[in-house]
Image 1: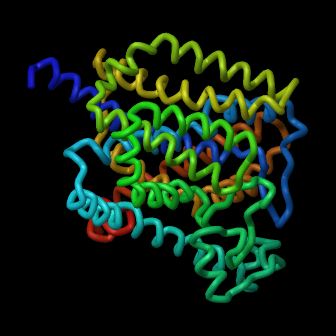
Image 2 (image 1 turned 90 degrees about the horizontal axis):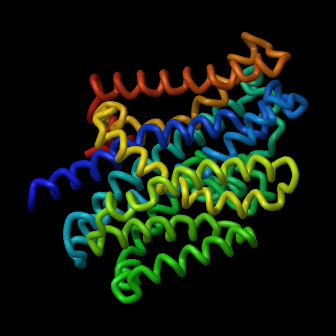
Length: 380
């Protein structure tokens, strides 16, 4: 391999590492600053009466919401097929590795979320989660099992069925759930890509657009997983140079990402029915945008991946669900905001506090109980 190829390979791998932490923070931010408002004392604290809050929510929806997970799927597909030619032995080894890196953390953190939810539902803790005791609970074996797959049919039914999608009790882990399904299906993905090449990606992208239009329940989530994982897999299987392939669209991706975000913002106020359609295009533009920005920062020595932050990203992703609502409630009790500025400060303070607490937890787990962290965070 020539020196230039070594440099390109290094930038490619570092770009993926550089993206991991910011993508995790984006996911956390989107969940903290939610248009659903705050649930305090068992009732919803509406923030919709503040135009500034509404704009902030729409801005986050336009530029951040739904952007991270497709990129995570793309990276997962690219890395899965990166090292060697695909074979039955390699498939078995990768399944074994993914059992430790995906399945075990998935089960652990859903179990912790379920225990935390049940803990708060006990009568003696009514002051901790007022109103939760009035939610019907089903402690049957079926409900316990379904909590790991679809919380709308689980122990405590907190998922809104009107979303046409479903989530495990630790709702952000729907990404892990569907990634496990895709990983199991990789022999089929490999054969399709080998036979149809890039047309596999084109067909899946078309199906992804159609599925979103008709809101086909869990199908939409699964198609998202297969589409972007297969896209990354195609790039890896055919040894595509990501720097060259994505770099050709650097300016176009930056311009389109910003323009489409602005268009989404406008549509949110004047024609909200178009938002979902515009968002689909911006998710694709965001994939190019994120990688090109990371590659630019590395090529120009502006920044480089931080090993601690990069390695903590998965932990932040799988654990933040357990704390962000509690942090929001505590801050609300302390500050009792009544203005738009007060709520904005509350939301961003919650993001900073959540990130700080999770990084601190990761640091202490890594330092004092690395074996435990290895199990719960799927680390090698």
